[in-house]
Picture 1 (cartoon, rainbow, N blue to C red):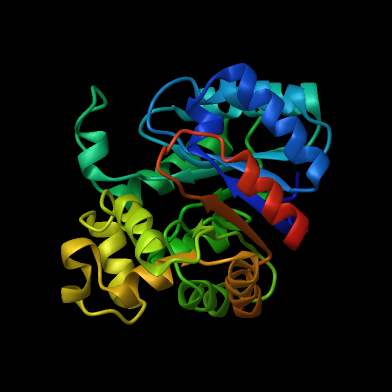
Picture 2: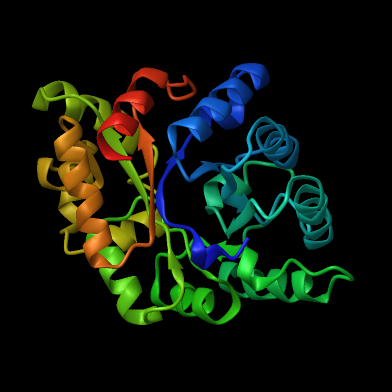
Length: 290
């Protein structure tokens, strides 16, 4: 697909990626019927492409996107080949989001040394372009938080898929890229109106991210003090990174991203179990927002 044509609301889900394959396929079919535009799948190991194929086979209109494909785990030849296998079989509904991940995640595997991530991304895109059947720029987006990677996304891909961002990051990205490219931010949400319960769920989610340098730098660039990252994050930080409340509150945060220049927003619904499928919440959000 042409990534810049993606609009509406999607869902980012570790459950669809790492949960039971049959349950994930059934859920994707329902999400397609509910009117969600895309599902976004993380990649921290395992056969990413097999899951993408399964969800594409279960749906008719839904875009399946990687959010993101970890370039340290998949060489360019494999990525281009599997991209074309999916699009040949299921049409132009496969969007490849590509990212450099994080040092602590990469060096904890057999992949090796996490070195010069920006240069590695440039080389990876060069390799994709050099394949006999290249993965076209209009079908790929980059996980971009900092200025250099955002500029690269505008030059070598169809746009960006920023994770753990704020509407402020969406606005800065749109200002940098201009009107054409896709901006598809992930937005974590908690359908809970009690502040203490909502922030507890949010802090559990954020605990694995606030210590990662890429995210910490991005959060500080968004206007937070470094001290606000400590102890699970200040209330102000938590409330900007994770939208919580009822459907109206979630809709207000979506509107902020759209007003800031997002074409498409993908919601990550948080709960006590990270790999559960929050079907009730997905249905409630669809009824209110789609």
